[in-house]
Amino acid sequence: MSDMKDNQPCNQDILIVEDSPTQAQQLKFTLESQGYCVTWRPDAESAWEFMDDHFPNIVISDVMMPGKDGFELCADIKKNERLRRIPVMLLTTLSEPQDIIRGLECGADNFIIKPYKKDYLLSQVNYMLANSQLRKLGRGGFSEMADMGIEIYFAGKKHYITSSQLQILDLLFSTFEVFVEKNKELEAMNRELVARNDRIKALQGLIPICANCKKIRDDAGYWMNVDRYLEEHSEAGFNRSVCPACLEQEQEVLPKKENKKDKHSE
Image 1 (cartoon, rainbow, N blue to C red):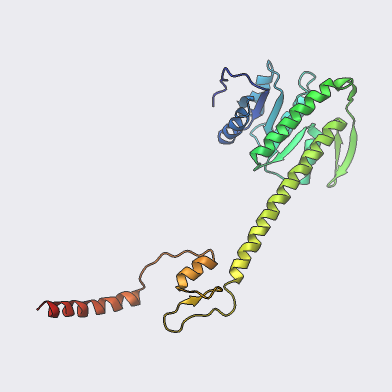
Image 2 (image 1 turned 90 degrees about the vertical axis):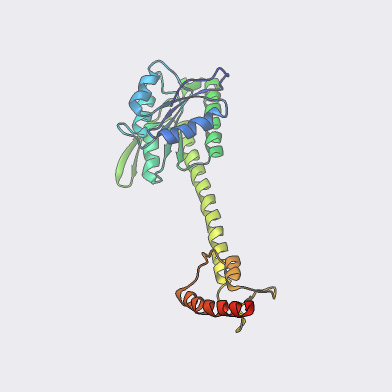
């Protein structure tokens, strides 16, 4: 994937650290479509080399990567005096509470669970960049935001959190928003399951069927073929063919039809 940038002006410089070229390309395209200048690096080592002489406005890093993972890369950034003010967003497929603690330990600013919606990711990127600018313009900027050290016990282990209060709030708020989004998705899935269950229930009970032609009467009083009724009241589809018994019967009837034709022709 090329890191060449167009001559068009860019809003901000964003560094993507993602070992999957496909996912990196999708994310790069999404961000560039909004006017951001985007650089991609496949691992923490090459990302660190890039930041030796570059200062991106934001770093978006996958968590699961070969070598150093996203948590370790974020921790290195936050320990570096020159780079520590760069906001870091972590992307992960994991959703264990322990991951949130690790995000706090490494000083991450935002936390998004894969798969994510493009609009949601862009809103979080915009928030992080705007929030970063506001803090720089605020009274005292970062100089008065002294890091705090807190020891906490979680899942039977002791953790030492050195993130600033605002970083902790940002990460917790972003995590809360992630779970709100996931809850909405689960609610939508639940509504779909209920709707499908209702369609299945429609096939239960007594169904009026003609003893002669085998057509079924629907709720509106119309008579229709069994296959059409099932297609309209279930998720079933039909691959029509001829069973062996019908095929054998058809083969027995066919010579009789041909004999009748021959007699008529005489």
